[in-house]
Structure formats: structure tokens, C-alpha cells
Image 1 (tube, rainbow, N blue to C red):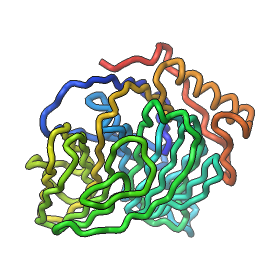
Image 2: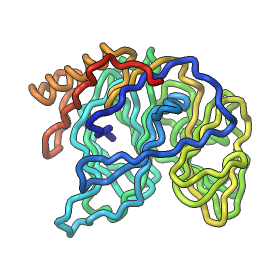
Image 3: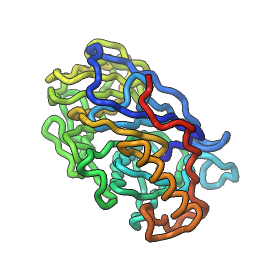
Length: 330
């Protein structure tokens, strides 16, 4: 998914970071995805209080949103034209609906509920995302992983992985990144990570064994839940610093569904602006200039980002850079 903000904030994530309380609750902010008739998302990462959880650097949560449907003339849903990425992996995860994915390495795939679509941008890639006409309800999350410096200049590629749902106590888990409770995803990642959907029946509790090296994030999608005894509001993200070996989740009076993310702290400073991740202001300037020259103006297939075949429409121009060098937030 693209960051479609017209004035995306500059962000430099600096290492080391200061310690926080045992459970830190991060509130979402509403971000419109496209024009006034398009859908909105709830963004919990990045923000001023926190920019990384392990290598996870971006969390957009959306829906459930009613879609116009195949027989409607009304426009809406997710329509994200071809746009670029560098230095990251996009993690697409749906609860309902279908999204058409096309990218500049020739991949064409559907994002479906319970199935992982993982796109590794490496040195540069472009892709489009459009919700399917038959989709009546669109509901899911789009997440990004920052690639470590040693891996961020590699060739781009795309993977699809379907995790098997497994029972752990009263809960059901789908591990789509890394490993948890003995379940391991085959999806390619470049640092020690975890990503999983966890479903808890009403009133159920679970103590999940977790890697004590990991910092963790818990995003509440539906229902009510507490994390380590701390109530987590809907669509909020709970952050836990490294050092715990067991994560306690307690559902309320209704069934709960969460996304669990986490990993070993990245330990690197990153600069993230619009859809690019780099290590300096000058790199971001270069990425933007190449996208504008190669795709928006010149439509070169041999540039850094390539072209997305099969999308009916123009690519997305980059916003203007701020008038100052990209720098850390206060």
C-alpha cells in the first residue's frame, strides 16, 4: 500500500532508543487513502512516540468497509496506482475481501483473507493495489518491514504464503512471518521476526511463549482484550519492550482478533519518507528523482523501479520534498 499523504512527514529513526513502560498504548491516526470518496486507514506506526517494533516500521489498519460491489456504478474501495518502494518489504494481510496486486517484476496475484502476500522491494520496485469488484466488505492490514542495511540493495521479488491455522489452548493462530508456538512461516525475512493473527473466543485467555529478545506489538482488530493486564482499545497498538518470555492475552465479553508483530530491535537508523526507506536525506532525494524521471516522465522499463504491466491508468507522482533536509523529529 502506498502512503498517499500529500505532505508525508519526514522520519529518521535513531538508534539507540530510550526505554519505555512495560505496556505502551499507541493510538491510531486517521489517514485518507486517496481522494474524498476513497477509503481511510488507521495508522499506528510510525508516529512521534515510536517508529519501529523490531523491523516493523508501518502499520495501516482498515475496515470493515462496505464496498460498492460489482453491479454498482459508484466508485470506492482501494485504488492505489503504481507507486515505488525501496529498502522495505510490504506485508499484505486481509480479514475479508480481495485485492489485485501487480508489480514491476511481473507478479500478478490476489490478496485473500488468511493468505500472506509479501513483496520485497530491495533496491526498488513498483506495484499497484486495487480491490476487486466482487468485494462487498474490505477489511485488513498493510504493514512494512524495514530491510537491514546489508539486505536493502538486493533484487526485488514477490512471495505468496498460506499459513495453516493451529490451535494453542483456546486460541487459533495463523503465523505468517517468523515462528511462534512451534509454527514457522516459510516467507523470506531478513531479521528475526514474528507476525501472526490470533483469534480468542469470548472470555478466553492465553499465555503465549515469546522470544525475550523481541519487542512486540499487539493490534486489536475486533472485540475486547487486555495485554499483560492492560486494556487495549479497538484499533490501538500495544507496545512491549524486550525482556518478557510470556505474553498474556485476555479476551473480554466478545471474541477478539489481534495481529501480533515483533522482532529483535533493528539497531539501525533509517530515514523513511513517502514510500521510500533509506539511510540519508540524499538517498531519499535520489530515489524520488529516479521515480519521477524513469516512470512518471520517461516510462523507462530499465530504470530502478521498472513498470507495472496490466494497470489501466497512470503511475502515482511523488509529493514534493520538504524545503529542509530530512531530520529526526523532536
